[in-house]
Length: 183
Image 1: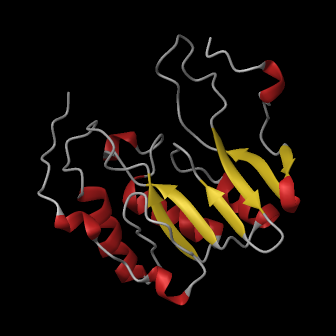
Image 2: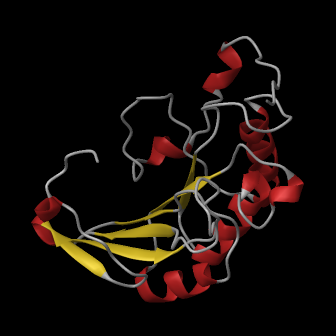
């Protein structure tokens, strides 16, 4: 429907991989969610990604809830230099399908990664919290747990392995608060 040539599309099952340029491996790893846009909403195979390079390893959660498979992902492909984990929109009732800030920290622990970068938050209103609440909760609990965070401004280029990269910069506080407007 999007007119992408079939030769440019690759489908992967969990644990399958594609080899990219410069010895980079892109591995489809388990995620946990549901597909609410079509009938049979639990049949979708949601995927996280492990990106394995010759010098660094990155975990990308995608849109997921907590899953014990993070331990297996870490065993097979860790240690990760960076874990990009979704933190919102979230609600405690969605604990099986979205990590939220505390779930992201728990998953970070299972992955045994070095630095956590929050993703998938502040994009649109889906829950009854302000757009900055996931980041504020993450910063607070991460400080208590001594988890190094990387919080670049949207679009800011960063080097995750640089010593100064993990200095949390709460850039979202520079903007007026946006109240929850759940549909």
